Length: 415
Image 1 (cartoon, helix red, strand yellow):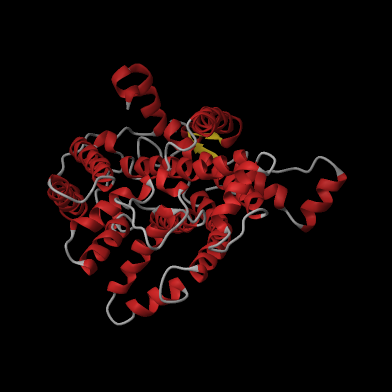
Image 2 (cartoon, rainbow, N blue to C red):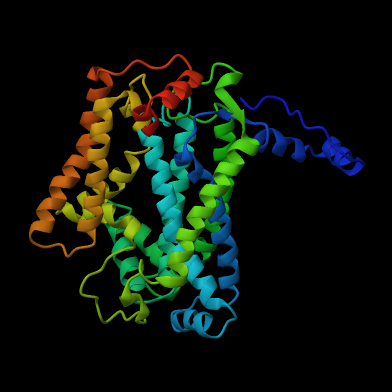
């Protein structure tokens, strides 16, 4: 898709480098002249936003590590030291802590856009799977990072989640003991999580590079869900999409800064400002908001092993989406029934998140079980049936035709 590089070095140094390491030509062909579908909307800008947030998290994380002490008797106080005594330590800590939430906001929008417009379909199945690996690594990284402040919710969240592995037959206890580094969540656990939390973002960066490479083979999907057929269907990445991505990033950073400077603790939990105490269990243990739908699914199954399998199944089922939805039409714009059921599923996921934040009692338990059933029913029953029986709208002949039709029709442009 990217083709051969058309980069021409402008000076002797650039010519010398290009003849020995053609990295400038690679960057030029990948991020300057690379053709993108001309109808990409602002939902496609969240990939670039995620790349910026990853770099931001790595930079602020490296600075924070310079002042953090990974020991159960010192970790909580070292975070307070960062907040009170380190120059701009409060800014680094709030930027990093809220950055995790911003990363998952952008990632969930990115995933939902891919689901809505069928970006998981051929020829982009491998691209989807690599993105799913990034999601898993991000979840693991954020979970381990949440443990590092060593507050009450950090300690008890780690205890609840890691103890789930003990439900695995035969090897469960061994896995749990290895995660803990002993027979309970203690200093070896904190050291393990600290080490992995520092390592995983660099692994994520490597997989992101692979994700970009995989994207450049078939090229980006688009709102019409049809492949480019001529030069009229595409535009070079720069300046058209760099400007668009830059504007979207600026708007997102304003939103991000609002949290950091005005409500930095809004997405956290007050119990995490109490130092971890293994002898005092919080009244209601909840994970960070981006885990809540899966936490609700975990609690909806009475069996510990069943809840464990349901929680991870709810995550893994998204990975096999290309094989559950076999419809030849990609975009929900031309699939009216799929669009309806997609938004019902989104509402279901949001409600599961709300239920995950509530105590597991009364009507919340029943509602969680009903929503959990529908969550899996959507993927395992509705999507395969829609793939076979859904009547779809006629596709435009080309991306250029879709753009022109959208320009003439306000209703079409709204899509």
